[in-house]
Image 1 (cartoon, rainbow, N blue to C red):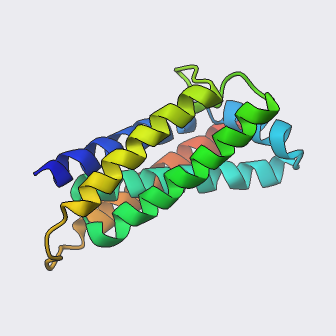
Image 2 (image 1 turned 45 degrees about the vertical axis):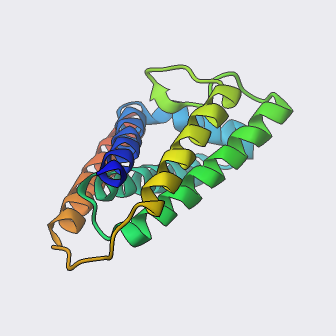
Length: 161
């Protein structure tokens, strides 16, 4: 039960973050361009990649689809995001990491603490997994539809700006 609640909580937070970024993708694109000094086209690609990764992993964590694979994938994602936050905090490049779009301002140092909590929750959830069972494919379809919708929303907003 704890495994389900923990991974569902982290999945929900990933979906919230993806929705916030999809609602205001321009802020994320500008942040990516500032940090990486890439073209707007390359930054758009990274925005879509981040949205797709966060939303699909979030939906799959909530639905408990193939948790023996999805939880480690989410763990890797949060490890990478924590590394990026560490780099940004060390270089003092930004004040708001834009992790939750422009709805909630979170500094890179605060984000590292939040991600550490998510990593702990994912590790505990993974340690309590039972034997994998046959899982239906509807969560995969749900994740694909949700991811596509968020990417299309962001694409439309980026196109208008």
